[in-house]
Image 1 (cartoon, protein in one colour):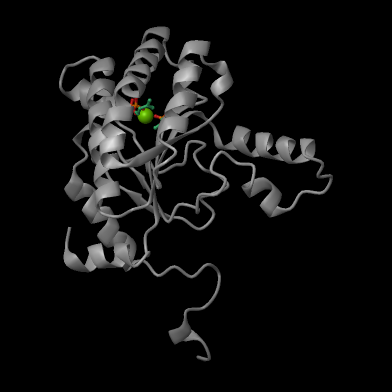
Image 2 (tube, helix red, strand yellow):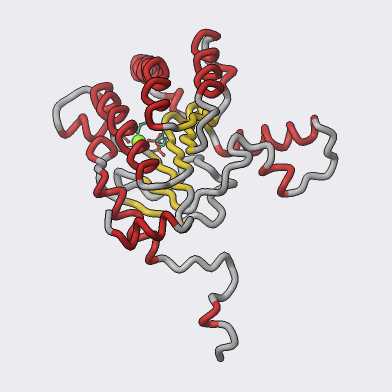
Length: 243
Ligand code: IPE
Ligand code: IPE
Ligand code: MG
């Protein structure tokens, strides 16, 4: 990573990056491999890229690993993804303590078998001493998240909801909104990811398939991010008072 970009990150200019990790299936197809082999490679790349983001000083990293709609895939693919996920959790704690990364799962855990659910909760608890955050969206859907947040606020006694009531009850409560959302494999859509939190995110799309994603690709996304002029609806200082 170049010095200027590294400094801009260190100054807090890019606190939260989110990835829609897409293209595992296409990566496998062009190589004559099975989709599940694509997911296996995708999982390795996920570990490499998420750790790299922490290394370059990005405090919050979020990855979209399995959507509420991904249950519609063939049973054999869904179970392969569940196995990969479960295996990742088994090895994650040792790796993450070395890297000092805290895991938070975004999504409804109640659908998972009790043993897996307990492993998820335990990993979240045991890694909670670290303050760099890796959010893993697994069985996550943005619309469902908003509905759940509204119902939680109502349960807590609210009868008239504010934006804070909703933000404070999302799976990402306490986490700043993503500054940058990166989607691989050329699709230009959110696919139900972080619908609320993406309000002012910058978007970066690349044709690179997720299993081919490299640290250099992350650097390129960061460089592009710092070229963007974020306005949040206002006028930048140098354009104020102009005609
Ligand atoms: C992303 O890769 C991984 C998941 C959605 C679980 P895909 O499996 O969607 O890969 P493509 O889009 O078919 O290439
Ligand atoms: C989005 O990818 C979900 C994840 C990356 C986990 P999909 O491959 O499921 O999205 P669509 O179906 O192309 O919109
Ligand atoms: Mg896809």
